[in-house]
Image (tube, rainbow, N blue to C red; front, side):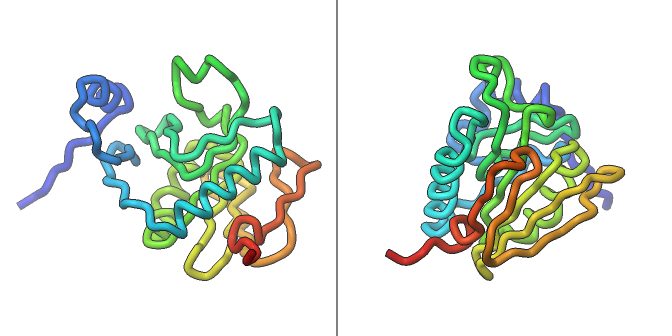
Length: 186
């Protein structure tokens, strides 16, 4: 028996959302497939929120920090990354979610979703032309940084546990790695 799955387009996905088909179901569209998003555990929610607040402080009005909000990509994907650092386009986002050209970089916080974040999502973001993608591995307190796109793939991968990192889009901003992977105990 051959199994054939239904592939969703962005347009059909949006029509289904408008019709209320997915109400109260946390899903995202990846390469035309509907993916159920697992519930967040406390460490994931905590680090996600703290990192987003930290980035808001660092970047101010230069960028919009969107946490757990969809982005629209051309490869029939509409993921909801944990943090998307995007151009501050104001009311433009009433008409559409950020497109790849609106996105400075994306951050995912991973505990149980590490394989998906380092596999499908990394590939989808690279194909779409997202210049920089960070994965915070909460299991090992590591920041994995993917950069330097070539032929729809990231060619540079950095693994950081301490120090600082400068995002490609903001050469004058230094981000403390420990603020993302492990906040100092109070």
